[in-house]
Every structure is written in structure tokens, then in C-alpha cells.
Image (tube, rainbow over all chains, first blue to last red; front, side, top):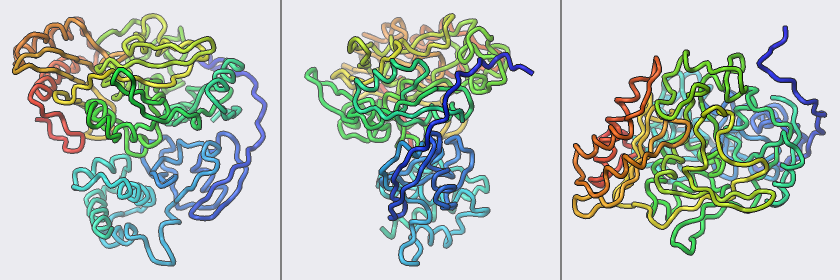
Length: 169
Length: 338
């Protein structure tokens, strides 16, 4: 059946994949991506780093939060090709020498998750928040973490975990 | 997502040239709105021109005592820039009322101006929408229109502009610096966005091939008496049902200059010269505030699900004027409205 509301699309030749270089969790890597490959799909499907989660894939849930040049961003709304040359940190890159990152330990200590699906994004977002150094009170932490949705509703424990990790800075 | 070509612009002239060579091309910077719309098949560019590495990322003082904000300055950097915090706190507050920390780290100043409506029907390609598909009809007028316009709408479109930042820029009389194939021009902020009329597919008065290079702020930033009051369905990370930007200059208790801009109520940030004139020279008191609110809303028209916005806007205007006049702006982290 013809869909009358959608105009005919111009024919666009399939582009070549584009070579890019990324430093992911300290490791330099080169890969070839299509222009539409998101940074999220690049780390999950090309680099097999599946800790970063695909939730909504529309920038509404925060599950795909990673750090690029130390700043928290949403990997699902980022084209990998646009970050050629960037330093990316995912949840897999936070622990050092087998010791959990203070945020990872704090999330365990405070039982700050139930199903765990949002947790990598929550922790990367919290790492970005701590690096920004602007949120101090519980109210400010809640506001600065509002881009990370937890459908299990672990929010009070997440705030407590972040407060604990901030205290260890 | 559909197939598209990718090109990285080497400078502004290159970006303008690449755009002129492909009518289906779009510029991309932060990408937070465009990539989302491409995933929903609403935007279908044949080519993305990556402008994210162009040298448009600085904030500089102008000869007139204002600031020139490069189009690629991220929203978060703009909100937390010392000169913005000190001299234009209304702008900082409005930016921090919008989106999330991650999105503000990505989204650019120019892209914020060019983001598209969040009307459900604009996003849903299975339904008619004059903005997405001119001539197909408006699904919102007789549909779910809780978030839609109460001012300046047309029979073709009742969508609202979703930005918070732009409401503050409208109140501050910002100007938009635009580079095109033939010339560079300045556009007054009130002339940048359009009302829907019979061409809702056009959000702005940008011409083909033109690129936003900067936003310029005049010297007066109203740092003493301002507020950005945003009313929404949840306390954070939601679009405005109604938002109010107020900037005042006071002499004692007399209002000597007044700016009043509303978000969430129209196809563009809404200012009304008559309402602002009704504040100037008057005492900062509730009857004056209410008079300005009534004037601003005199032609407001609700639809089935959003008529509540008219009274909500009236109350929000009065509250915001009181917050600004008393020097107690709305906090964007401590959400209790006082």
C-alpha cells in the first residue's frame, strides 16, 4: 500500500565506511563506521564494550551516558564519525588496577540499583557531575542527575551513593 | 536511520558552499535534536555537513559592552561562563531550566535556536502534520493538544517552540549573526523565529545556505531584577507548559524598564510591547502585574486540552514579575516556587 504522507526519497548512494580513531578507556583504536553509526553502537557493536546500555536510543533516559574528553554526553545522539580523535571513557574504564571506582563501590554500599540496566549510565553521569564540581546538596545532585532515569526507583540510594563518592574526592 | 552522506566543513565558507551544492543537506553541530528526528524519520537529509569543528566556540566582549557568543558554544559552557553568570543571569537560569546535564554538554547555542517543536504529531510520521508535510493538515487542533499554543497559532499549526534559552534571549533583545552565500547579516531576535501562519514548515527566517555564526547580547543584562519561571509536568527534564522570563530595571519601587517573554505558549518566544509598556513607569505591585498579564493574554485562545494554560500563564506572569521585582529569582535546583 502506498503511504501518501511520505514523499518519494531521492536515491542516495551508499557511502563508504569512514575510518576513525578513538581512544577508548585509554586504548587507542581505529575502526570503520558508516556515517549514521552512533557512538553507542560503535562502542557496543564494534568494540564489544557492552557495559554502555541502549535504553530509549532517543536521548531521554541517560542509559547510554559516557564521558568524552571527561564530559558526560549521550552516546546514542552522537555520531561516531563526528568524534574522530576523541578520548572516550565508558563504565568499563572507570575501575583501575582491579579496584572499583569510588562511585562503583558506593553504588554497591548503598544498594543504589535493582535491575542494574541504568547503572552504567548513572555512574558515568555521576562521574561527570563530580568532575563538574557544581552540585553539592542532595537537591543539586537530584537536579544534575535528572537526565538519568531509573525505572526501579532507586533514586534516594543513588543520591546517597553519589554523596558518599563525593566525600572521598 | 536513512542513508546519508557526511562531509566535515573546513571553515564557514566551506560549510556555506557545501550547503549550496546540495539542497537536501543539513548542518550538524551538537546533533541532539537533528539525530533524534532522523531516527524518527522526520528529518531526511541527503548529507550532513559537520560544522562542529569550526572556530565558532568563543565568548567575546563587544565594543558596545555586550557579548558575542559563538554559535558552537555548548549550552552548559554558556550557562556557567563567569560573564554570563554575572551580567546575564537570566540567560544562565533559562539554559539550566532546560534539558539535562548531558544534553546541555552537547547542544550548541546555534542549534538551540534551530531546534524543532516537540508536538507529538510532528514526530509521528503516521499522522498528518503541516509542519512536517505541508498541506497534509494539522492533527493537533482536534487532537491531544495539552502542550500546544495559546497565542499566535494559525489554522495550519498550533505547535510551540520548545526552547528555554530562546525565551531569555528574546527578553534580552539579543541579535543573531548569520553568514550566507552573499553576505553576513544581523537579525533581531524577535524577527528570527516565525509565527506559523500558512507556512508552518518554516520555523525561522533563515534563508537557504545561511548559517548561524553567533548570538550577540546588548550591554544591559538586568542582573539585579530578573527571573526565569518554568512550569512543567515534572520538576526537571521536561518541556515547559508555560515559562516566563522577566527582566526589570527599578528606581525605588517604580519600574523604569520591563521585559516580559513567554515560552511554551506560541510558535516563537512571545513578547508583547503593550504589556511591557503597561509596566513602565508604574509601581511594582500586584495590580500592575495583573494588568500586564491580562494585556498579554487578551487574545489567548485555548484548545480542548490546553485552555488551562491561559490562567496558568496569567498566574505565572504575576508570580514571575513579583520574583523579579523583589530580587528573588526562581532557583533552578531548589524547585519550590516562592
